[in-house]
Amino acid sequence: MDYYAEYRGKLRSPEEAVKVVKDGDWVDYTSCTAKPVLLDRALAKRRDELWDVKIRGNLLPGPIEVAECDESQKHFVYNTWHCSSYERKLCDRGLCFFTPMVFHNLTAYYKFFLHVDVAMISVPPMDRHGYFNFSLNTGTSAEILRQADIVILEINENLPNVRGGYDDCVHISEVDYVVEGPHDALDSPKPHPITPQEKAIAELILPYIKDGSTLQIGIGGMPNAVGKLLAQSDLKDLGMHTELCSDAYLELHRAGKLTNKKKNLNRYKSVLGFALGSQELYDWLDNNPSIKAYPLEYVNKPEVIGQIDNMISINSCISVDLYGQVSSESVGSRQISGTGGQLDFLEGASISKGGKAFICLNSTYTGKDGKVVSCIQPAFNGEIITSPRSQIYYVATEYGVVNLEGATSWERAERLISIAHPDFRDDLIAQAKERKIWRK
Image 1 (cartoon, rainbow, N blue to C red):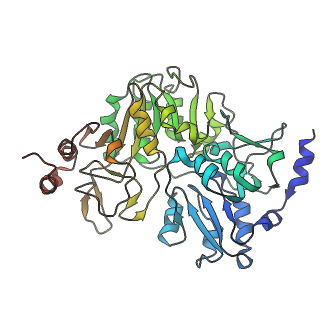
Image 2 (cartoon, rainbow, N blue to C red; image 1 turned 90 degrees about the horizontal axis):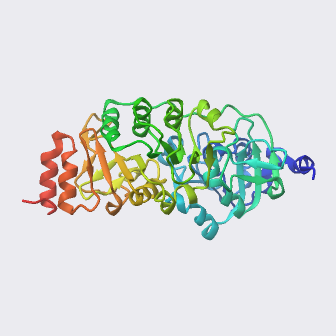
Image 3 (cartoon, rainbow, N blue to C red; image 1 turned 180 degrees about the vertical axis):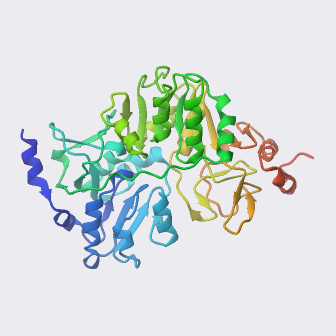
């Protein structure tokens, strides 16, 4: 069969392709580097002729033209599953709405509850068999396209091909339209400088990790600090099973630490859902036989994670209260990021043989007014709870690491206060007494 003839028959300009969008439609932009830049720009130009078009995205870089062009939100309403730094600013401006979720359930949301009128996604060029690889975004793409009435692919010549386990590509026969056009280089997050506090926390966590451990390292300075220290350590034969693949794993690979040879699931394979990092990271992932991308319904499923012996999960948060509740996504009610896969890996690592799950945070935060506040709080008052106290395992600050699994309310308070900044401990004890979670 001549797949290239079928491709040419479906080729449209971005302006022609977005004509399929109608008033009231739900349009999906999928995730991260799969953002359809050309289609987004073309759709924004139709602002004055469209009404109440709802767009979903996830960790998208800016600018998102449909959000920027319509502050009234009468024409376009943008929604995200997880805020990138850019989407957080849109939320602050009232131009983005947040959708709560747990990542391993995202496929089920689309399969059972959500409708997609038009899916728009950026992919690498078609291969000779008529397939388009989902590249850095296998974790969230397949089910969205399956549920869409109309599928439009935007060819981004800069995207790598990432080998997958399943649901890692779409065939030209399942596509309605294809658009082409030049793209800028892929966005790369600016390197986060490691603070002294983050380095101290990473050093405290390191002794808990042993040879042959499999790692899930979240996004941000703290997890990256752990990755750097691991790359410089004497540890060997580490594995990767992670929702997000970042440059921390590239460092481990370059240091010869990332072999996956001790994994009892997907041995010799680094497993990921999606990737976000430098061009060097994308080059490493491109057509690499040691890499396997899966949908997040697999990568983040606690029952799958729990099958991996010595699974180590390392994530960061914004604050913890004395009950052990964790807020990783908001300051008060202000949305900062999202739930993501933190809860998935907390549960999965907890049931892994030899597994451990760490939630890391600095003991204090300095506000714009110069006021220093404790990140270990007496009790939350408006913060969005990302992980419930019943799921919390290890908590780490620069002052120590404590295990909350199976701990009573007074043990939790006692242990968390022991790793709070010394300047705040007396007040936290007084607050714990008032809440009757402190032993006299």
